[in-house]
Image (cartoon, rainbow, N blue to C red):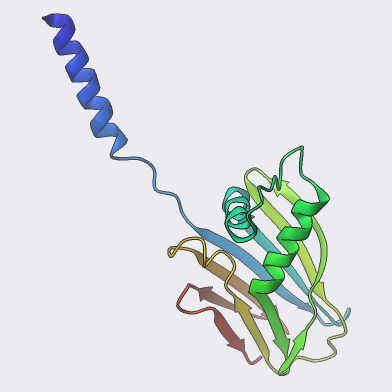
Length: 167
């Protein structure tokens, strides 16, 4: 009887504890700096790699291994395609091409570096960021900008994926 009570108690405890599972945050962070001397926007993104791999599988029906030893060139191509479909900038009302520069892993976060060249002056900077918004409704993309020494932050959610900066 004691053994049965122990099993019931442990089972009940495990059931209760499993209902308090850790809630995952769905947040990506982007930094956009205007390097006036280089006439370029320097962009850094920090995205949880597992969320991005899951999104790419859903979107393109292909398993990707970003951040893994068996990562392929095709994985990177799909990542860039998805990012460029969901992240864009307009400078002074003109759409600008974003160039992928490099990437690295930091724990479970994929850090990507981009730039936008030939920007002599910024009167307005419009940002569109819906990265991972089609993955989970809780996804939030925080963008921190520095233009002419002025810092500004934006929060992009599935219902609000655009921001306009007028330095």
